[in-house]
Length: 117
Length: 112
Image (cartoon, rainbow over all chains, first blue to last red):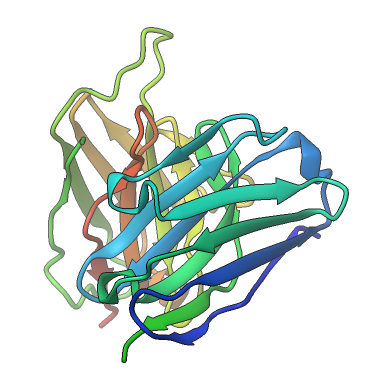
């Protein structure tokens, strides 16, 4: 059974950093691209970043470029999202998703990130 | 960015009736390979989104045949025949043609 379990969320002050992790199981992690998608009540679902199978190709939405870094460790079956210089508008539930062109076929349960002083 | 715009449903929908959800993209999602890169997801209350339809009309594994997708390059419809209690939630369309991947604002389905 495919499982994606996010961790690392919480309350953080503006300008600070947070690192999310997504532990994958039930499939050959290194064969799949991965992604982070966030959700807020006002903006709905927003794709944040994607990473290729080997980690060599990464893609970001403009609003997080230069602040967020997506990465993966195929030996640990885990992907990460390093979030720096956090802003209040980054407050959201962050989902880890398995990415197989042309869709996201499995999603984690999500982890909340709140950016507030 | 490709903007995805979803229509509303005349809620609540009577159980057993059909429901159609519309989605429009600001750019054609028809790829040169002949496939249309439009997905549909359902987010049930308290759950994560789940994939229903990809390539505009292909049902994902395990998805009921009560769900069907259709459309053109920019106008799409998700039809749910004989709506059931388990269909309640918010439906999202998404384009997978370009980065950034973008979603529609969601369409809520309530059951009568």
